[in-house]
Image 1 (cartoon, rainbow, N blue to C red):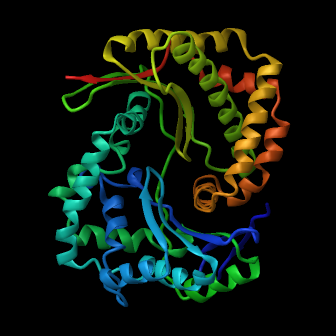
Image 2 (cartoon, rainbow, N blue to C red; image 1 turned 180 degrees about the vertical axis):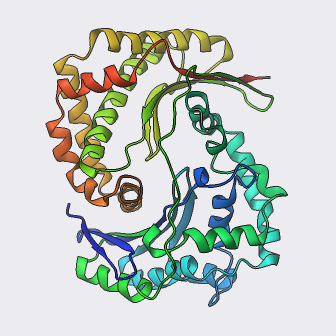
Length: 411
């Protein structure tokens, strides 16, 4: 796979990954603005803006937007995270021009209609409620707060604050400040040539000009003493446990970022295999134990998690911590690392056929790490990964006596 990158005169970074064997094409417009860029009072602002971009532009009402997507089979969505907001569309390549026209209009020309704003609060609050009822989401939304000291910046990417605090002028001010071409990227991935894709990007995005403002960010500081968070909820049937270790953010040099990204991905996979074998296969304690690596530009973390009956959570915790300690103490066998590398290589290769996931990953790498072309080199970096590199990151990041903990149980 080859990823091509050009910068338009207005500063918009355009990345194209042609896959001519595919009939579908994904478009992702990424904005370097997320929940860590909000004030605590206005937490939920980025998420609210994301919703309002679907509610009408200067050219189209929300009903016309929906008519276009339905007529041409355009699958469109958006997502807000800590450091970025992504606007996404997947379409049959014959109708790519239609999808590009639509998504560029939504990003460039929203109207933030007051009536629609009032109506949209309900769906947003419902979405937040759904997330707060999902055990896995509860872990991912709260784990960073147990291991980093940036309390005001690590509220979940969506918050109930929008119910009463966020006004139209707040949305417009933030949109006009951060939605500028130099603070954004456009990725086109799938069944189209690079030249055609760049021409489409110029056609729909070159006239977009606005003063450049980028978020002011700094590397997050780890807590001197990590926290243990106990959450009780009446409306859940199973418990959930998460054990997290802080990692640094990997914004900056794309080469260094990619090497760390791949090494930590391998460590997460290795630990996931070990914990799965112990927790599920040997002891029958949980259906879905595993380990994930969550890398951002300003912070990152490694988290082991599992869902189970409340009475089993302490046993799972003990096994997880023993596996982290065993890894720290005894390292990794070469045969084990080779197995992990082979498995990851297959996963990376298979992922290239998923147009939207790949386009999102390219956009994230461009915005957070500095160059979306990193994805092109991920297999090569995996092949170079050696025992010395793995052991260096294990030594740096895994301290079994210092971990964040979340236990979620039925009230």
